[in-house]
Length: 306
Figure 1 (cartoon, rainbow, N blue to C red):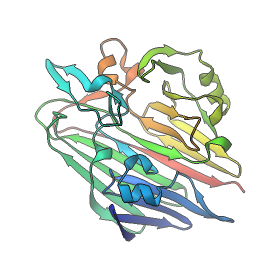
Figure 2 (cartoon, rainbow, N blue to C red):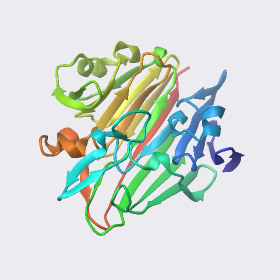
Figure 3 (cartoon, rainbow, N blue to C red):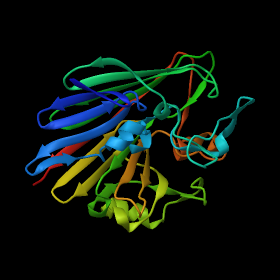
Figure 4 (tube, one colour):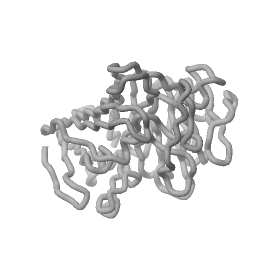
């Protein structure tokens, strides 16, 4: 383990063989880079954070950041639960919808750091998000790839709505294809909020066969995900494998960027406002009892195919 001091605090470097991971505890507990030395130089499995993003402390410029205690958007930042009206402030540009939880906007503490593994933690008191919780992340790098465990513990006195996930950015979108087994796509409105479930959308079949990232412009949730997905580029592949309850997949494929996002998550966008109209399997999310912990993990298995 090596630490590097920068404008946004220390970066933790993990290494194993020819692989390298940089973590930024201060910038939302994010992964700043994940690379492997190839025959022609470093191969970046995730889009690396730029010097400007690190200097600005911008989590949206990182390689991947944690999603806790909910994933993606809550419509207008509002929901009602057990007679309590919750109102959250917007936290992304000019969108009225609160996005990606709390963890990505807060510094995390380093609990442990070794040559190839590290643990981070985040303690949040009840406030605007009226539920106290503790979150942890554990990162391990080995010969197969990168493994990430993430958890949330309800440290308050009442039940807490919770969702977990991660938000990886993958490079070289124009050269990439994604393969995943899913059953339905959540169609969205003009504000990218879920409205309809569609099993016949072209992306469902396209993903099963290996879909070029540029085939569709997406910012959508998929359900019925089998918790495995493969990204293929010329000469290399990455396989993402997740554990329940990361049963949902988000694909973001902007046409004007050279990156795309493929996110393993435990709740669909706005799950807490969908819970009265849709079955749990359609929207995910769950209630966590006081003192209880929800934990899960995912892995990036990497292969330079030459």
